[in-house]
Image (cartoon, rainbow, N blue to C red; front, side, top):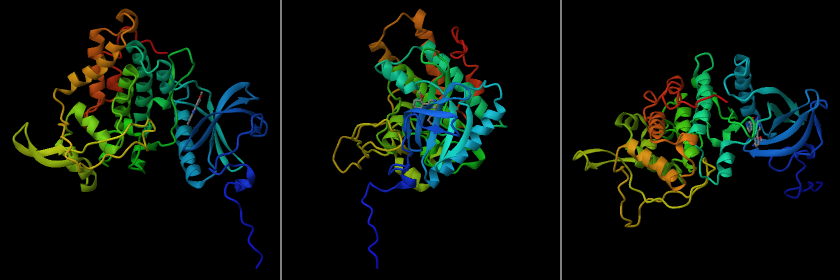
Length: 397
Ligand SMILES: COc1ccc(N)cc1-c1cnc(N)c(C(=O)c2cccnc2)n1
């Protein structure tokens, strides 16, 4: 039989040669999409979903961001969910008042789903990088917090009911590089709270306890993420930078103390035994739940979902450091949030809002966002009434 033409690896003509080996469309600056309406300029971002390019809309004479999804079925399916959710959001938010990115239109191009968005600017991680990870003032954080809370309040509305599922600094973008207006982007992992499909969601540093325990989750998981984000925006460092799921839980317990027994016992055996064990508690002199004593190793990677060194079971005689915090969560949070800033103290509090009173309010709000029980966790509408958010300089962008 005729020798089957062997294709050399890497020369695969994927999708008629339009794609690279990773199902991504090969970007040609100047190329015209959508019957000549969009002229592609450059790639500005890359993700598991595909790529984001900057383009000129030659009809409306504006710049747009086009998210070009990989030409592979799972990514295409997820993009169709994102389009459904974003279309629903844009229809309800007719006057663009809820700080959620607007999907302008979508189309297929050479087997790639393309989503056209208004062009936004740098994300909050890039903003932190520009401060050399020194963090930003409480006044600026108040402005960011108020806008993201408005977005979360909108998503939590009964007629919207969408869980973002991947809130993190990279998914909050400035509208303009020199202004404080922000929008929430990337609904590629989102779902309706009554249509939860996945249990392994959220980027690790921002992952809520109920998701880590495999429990049913709700819009409250985005509030946990926001609590972590606001702390990070001020200190410049992730609040909980776990190198893996266990280390993540260990860091959370170290700061906030043990989770409620009810939550731990609601989890199935597989999830529970990943983190906790029964032991004699010195605090009560009785048997109770405690976090497993495992020595963790390795640096932490920002990718959040993957990477980082796995915790190793303690097969060594490494001293077992007590993981339960030495003081109450509020004091621990205050210590973390003020420690970094004292070292990098720059401006008088009159300009930055970094007064002791404001710190107390800021820490109280973060603490309420990090309530273990999602039913106790502060709701977006309540948080918008919190004294820190209502503070003197809280002007919306
Ligand atoms: C300067 O803008 C960006 C830079 C890098 C990246 N990765 C994205 C953007 C950008 C700009 N404007 C937007 N509207 C968006 C998005 O909506 C977006 C980006 C990634 C995934 N989903 C949505 N993304």
